[in-house]
Image (cartoon, rainbow, N blue to C red; front, side):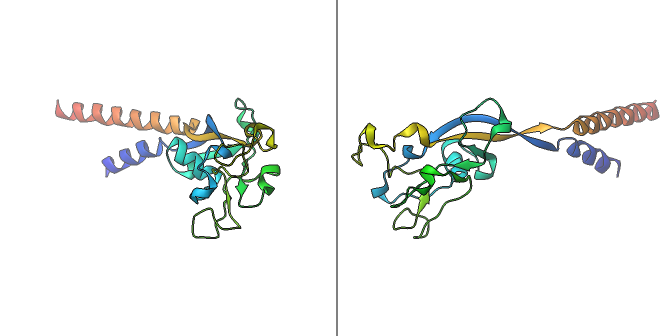
Length: 174
């Protein structure tokens, strides 16, 4: 019984809140060319693809402030098959749409990681196309575990209890 109490105290001491940490960025147009009918990704899914982990590990921002996590917008740039709506108005970081079971074509489809209305060479746009890159950069923040003050207190209490029980056991053996 005492062992279970100790294990419970120690495991509870490692609960944590999430604090976002900036990890990088990607441009919508960094993705595969639309003519290859690529997989559709929300911005958080694209972040998981590019930086590892799972989509729920990430927050996305269209704000280029990579120092202050309070400026995270939880919105993203997306491109659409025959539709540039989300190149001009960002949408939710978790939004994507595929009308064909996960791939980009046909319309309507929206992805945060596809080279469609871009200056990508395969598509044939020049830099003066009006759709060039920097305006469509999604800034990626990863949620990292940060211990709460209560967690430290519980961990110290658990360690103190271990010390007390060890001392008591040694005294009982003498």
